[in-house]
Length: 209
Image (cartoon, rainbow, N blue to C red):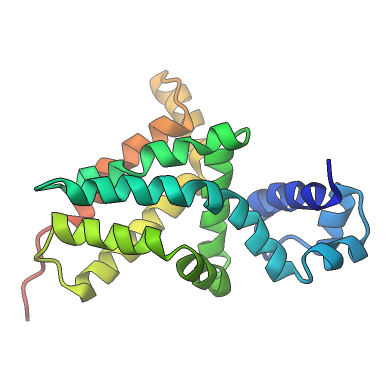
């Protein structure tokens, strides 16, 4: 394995488990068994390393997700369940890219929000604008009455729900087994959250005061 990939794999594991803020470059170099100069040579900074870790997944996910969302936009009368269901197959395809890829990616994405990594959100929206643009178009076609302001709030709340759910997915899977004798996988967690977020985004518009 190349030095660059050793660094990326170590960083991904530590970032997912400890967060971006809670992981030091010293920990990454220790786990990757490389020196700090190697990190600086390949990435230049911790921020650039974070971007590189996320890009490995986004480069795989983005084309599939854009295509899935475009197909939703081509439906004559899509609903919000159609919109959010478009995420399932692209997300699960990450398991073919890397072992536990879906779970790892969603944990990393959640860390980008809970760790207040504003630069990462900016990077993802500017480097992969097709995902956001097609998602917004699909939501607008499914619920044209939704104002831009109301969409902002509902998508913000949706992201909070998804981040919390995915960051605690292992615990949820354990609870489903112990309390309901259900053997679930990350795909089941994703499918369970979709009706909830679709209903939330699709709730009636609040009355004007």
